Structures are given as C-alpha cells and as structure tokens.
Image (cartoon, rainbow, N blue to C red):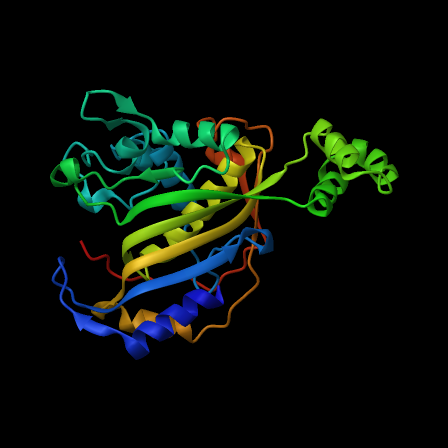
Length: 307
C-alpha cells in the first residue's frame, strides 16, 4: 500500500487549506488516481489495523439494498450510527440506489443485477456503470454519496494465462491441455472452455467525489476491491485491477497527529483474501464466505470522524 502513503505525503506537501461542510477544515488536493493489481494481494492498509468485519458487513448491507442500521448494529458495526435517525434510517443511500433506483416512469432498476447480467452477456459493454448519485434524492439522504459511481471493464486472457488457471484450478483437465500444446489455438481454447476456465479478467474503477484519506479511504479501497473479486467470481472471471479515482482528496486538520504516526510506520506484506468458491450469486454471499490470511498490521489508530 505504498501508493496510500505516497498520497498522504502528496497532500501534506502540495495540498490547499480549505473549509468544509463539517466545519473541521482540511488540506486538500483535487484529482488523484491509484491502481491496485488484485493478483498481488488484497489491498488492505497494513500500517494500521483496519476493521475488516465492518468493511465486509457494510458491503453485504449495500448489496442487500438495505438503508437501515439494524443489520449493521446486530453485527457489531457502528460506522453509520452518527448519520442515522432515531429509527436507524438513513434515507435512500447506497443500497437503495444500487438495488432499487426509481426511474421517471416509476419502474425500479436493480443496477447490481443488471451489471452482473451484462458482464455475462456483453462483457465489452462500455455502459456497465453503477451509480449512487441520484440528484433527485440527495436531499433525502442522511449523507450524500462519497463514492459515487463505479464502472466495470473486462480484458480477455491469453491462452497462456488461461492454461495457468487450468493448471491451478482445473487439474483434471490439465494434462489434456498440455497434450494440445503443439496443436492449434482453437483446440486448446475449446478444451479450456470445456473446463470452464475463465476467459476474462474483471477490472473496476471507482470515482469518489470526496475522500477522507485517513479514515475513509482504507475502507473504500478494500470494499471495492472485495466487490470486484465477488463480481469476478459470479461471472466466471478473474480479478484484475481496482482503480480508485478521487475528486476532493483530503486530510482533516484534526488528523495530523494520526497521519504522522501512520507515516512513521513501515509497510508490511499485503494479505490474501479467499472467497468461498461455491457461491454463484452476488446476493448469496455471507460474512463467513470470506477468509483473510497473512494480515499482520500495525496497531489501530483512532481519530475523530467529521460528521
């Protein structure tokens, strides 16, 4: 996660002091991009411990279309409590927009379902976008979407890349594939297809209009990296890149002590995220379907949330 540390250094060295909605004050830069190759480890910050339980449960909550904190609180997640009303309601935030966007004619659009179906039927479509930014409902939301919309993009795997997957995941077919190594590409491709070997990798780019770099960004990166892995699995692809693009990218003025503490720590190896391979629907994932191994972070760093 060197990119994350580089971003904090960049803001400290080049940022502009700005006022903000919360009255806290920030140091901010505008426009920044980071790319994470998901084949090289799960992009979870190691210079402080991140609460993975909150990240996973929040993502599952979004995917169920839920906008009430009841599920989160039942699972020990409090990250949305500061914005919820007395009944735990947050208005038509992410989950509602992702799963039940109301069109002008009254029809309801399930953007996640549509995205999965389109990736299966038309993986090169340039319209594979999910958006939470609904101008007609912003005033009803407890918090306007910070991570506004994301787009999927697929890349065809080479025969060599597919064969590597066969040798790793489809050993029953491997020797047959090797025996075809001197034959035509079509024969190898046909056998790979028969083995149901993935033929594409899935990439995802997120646009985040407002990024709290110390507290929010580590969650956002991990959440959308995990979503990319989940979507890849249910569409029979392999995870490619997660790209994080940010608009107003800031450090809050009351986070400087914590920022300096984190920057003083040495980076550690990225962990590996394993997902239950038996899950075939994006809506069927449970918390128990995710296993993180090799996560050895520095201690957690506490900081106040700007509400």
